[in-house]
Amino acid sequence: MIQEPWMDAITVLKITQTSERFLKLDYISPNNGLTYGLLRHNHKKSGLAQPDLFDTAEILSEPANKAKQKFIKGYTPLKKRNAIGNDYQQLEYTCHFANFLLNNVSDVPDPSDLYALTVNTLDAFEQQFAPQIILIKALYRFLKIEGFPIDNAWWQSLSQEYKIMAEALLTTPLAEVEDGFDSNSAKALYDNLCLWVHRETELKVMKL
Image (cartoon, rainbow, N blue to C red; front, side, top):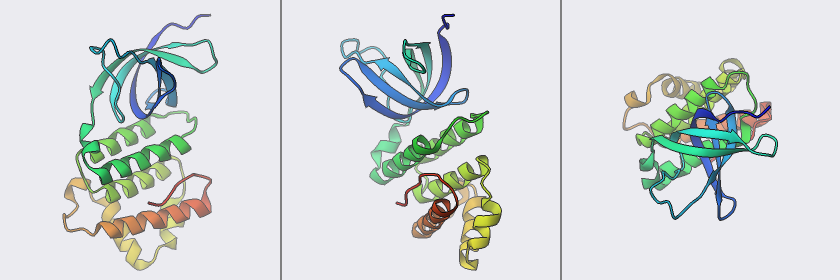
């Protein structure tokens, strides 16, 4: 049975030019989780929308001949996140987050929570909040979504100083975090959580 083309909302995590004709888009969607599609790359038709890293877009897909491979026939950007690329550190941390997702997101029954986490995190990077704080919040939320016992096991492993810092960071909305907060403290807490992840899980996560 031939599958009909379908529409999907996606957020782009990686773009690779596989040939002169095609771009491979690795993306996450609320319906299909982490997947990819091939988009025809045509320089002559400059009027067509071209994908950018971290776009949220609507796509029209159709299956290709190979199993699980699909072609993207239509690409309509819904939200561009161009401000991320204007700051090197912001871009570095955003790419770090995207690579973490690409390395660790597997098939899940309902990927909508992970999709919402992705969109909210990229929006925070776009709004130029402190990247160290965005990243620790994102990793913590990812682990909770995936069911890891961080509220017990990781929390119990923290010193009193780190517990105070973690509670302040993880419970305060980004917009309410004081401008004078020490970003190095947030990075130290992130590195501590990374060590716990390495020790207690099979996830692939790298310290910055």
